[in-house]
Image 1: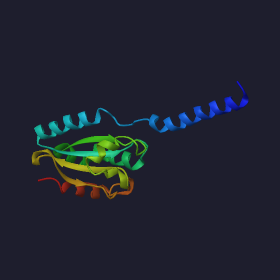
Image 2: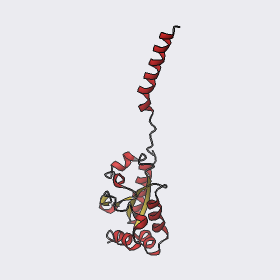
Image 3: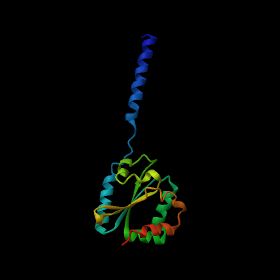
Image 4: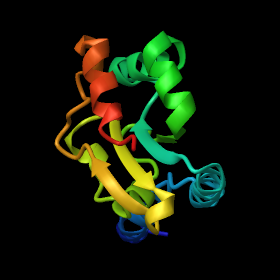
Length: 155
């Protein structure tokens, strides 16, 4: 094989490689997310509780702060336990569960954590969505602000 033919063959190989590269993009949609969401929604319906979807990520300090307060702050934890079911949705590096989030207006686009509050007793009506980044500075928010926000959705 001559050098010229080898060069042409290599050119074709590189061309094919680069044309196929975009189709090899890793899909980071969690196939279980919708299933878990539907199970959690049904559980909330059975228990007559509202559902809070928290779109966030483990690397996010504001997400960790909000999660910690949902679990450990006496007033917030009690409020959550009595009135809500919380489902955490991992957004990865804003590249995971993107299609699932579109069902709720992609609230993570303006920052995380972002919350979507759903009332299963009202045909799964979305009561609120923090799609303007309202909790994206959660680590600096006062506990009372979080508590007051959640109280707006209690009958």
